[in-house]
Length: 416
View 1: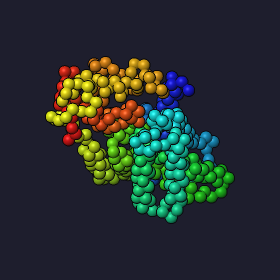
View 2 (view 1 turned 30 degrees about the horizontal axis):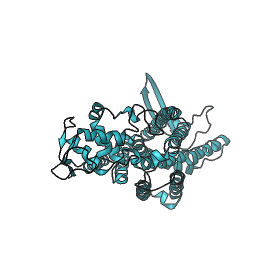
View 3 (view 1 turned 90 degrees about the vertical axis):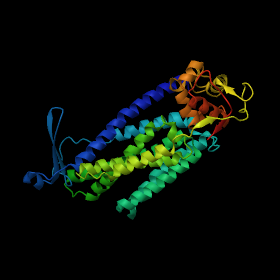
View 4 (view 1 turned 30 degrees about the vertical axis):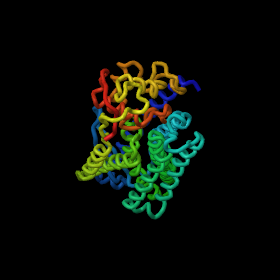
């Protein structure tokens, strides 16, 4: 398929994913908030009709009166709104992007030979098995006696997700591992809707319509999965933006960073859910802040300095020194096939991110980006397609730390 049309499919898929994701997460957050702000009905007639809670609100110049029944009303209304297609379309658009970018382009974005020598079919098979198997294991745990113990179940899920993150980061590129971790959690979330929440609601509606007793277990199971989904939301949102931050997925301990940030996201959600109940307990958000600060401090790049030493391998400058021309040569050779005005690397019709690295002014202007992508982490060149050496990365780091000057000369480079 032409790279041009792949770009368009990616653009439209991302846009759709973003739109329906907002709709799903927005409705999910609203209903969690609504459920946690209900008060007993003021009107005794409402209580007699089965209303368990109500809430008055104002928005957009109008007043709203929401009521929730303990089980179901004695007579169903003619129009009943369902909230499901937001979830389904979010998952479908996300899977479309996963297939288009990471499975169709497995050689570029999913496979990292430094991690595992996989063929594209093998990599895709591992990714699909992880997503499907993750849902099956999660669902079995929820249906087991462990599912009735929220605290213990949360610990077990955290351990299993940690194992999944570690395993994915051992076989895939950092970006590929992160996106599959997000796809695993996202699949659990939408499968909760498709296999548990909506079927339970359909049974409740059918029972109410026929005048049969409604099984309250359907509501309890749906509530359990909805609670899980709200705590999964912020970790999934982090994964959706993580490909912009190589400092996370490009780190040697990327799996631990992924779990720490995901846990921080879940704790932030715990804080706000508690706040809905009027319990302003700061500890979840304090712990989340400490986690994020610890990750930021732990992965801060170590300085690369220039000291008198033997010449750097492949140095084409005068004996004992390296200069800006050497930097330019490295960037053009290792990065130019993708980051050129007209890329020569198959699969690219334009330079990724619009970043061109050829003229000296381009290279100097993008020094910070070069440091983030190729020095602080090894995620560029992607999959190390051009075989950039560590000595070359160290040289780039020392040039940038010295001010990214075009008149730069230095002795050979060593890493602190």
